[in-house]
Image: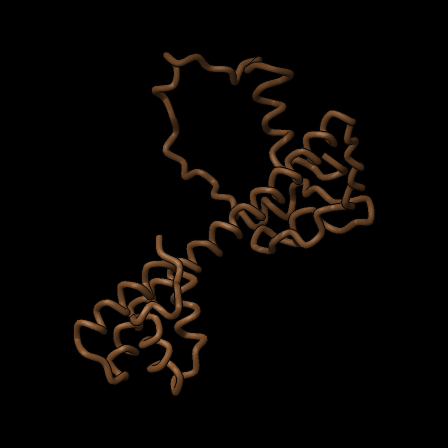
Length: 184
């Protein structure tokens, strides 16, 4: 108990002796009917706490603060961390997982790029007819030119690569068969 006295040690020693009630003050359950009506002494918990043992570190700092309401400020010296030993089997698993993640990342980037390309191509294809409406064409010629241009992604790219002031001539050449475009 680190040099602190237990406040009721002597009265309890008289009652219990070493490990059980002894001598003439010992009573069994049948004799408990004659309990005196004297008031029981109340103990202030703060006084009891101050009189009892409180754990402390070697430097004298209290382990759990200076009183019951103060949180612990010094938990004690921190243990040095052990270096993890990695055997060859764990290292090879780590390397294999790293390679798998790198390959997966590359594959996912390719998938994302192709999905993005398809979205961009679809958006371009939707705008082709609007661009054809700006030209001086008959309605049936617009339908035919649209069908030819959107039939392959290279045709869409070629259509948008032509400057706007030359698109009229380009579309007329495609419809006349003078320019052959890819068809799927």
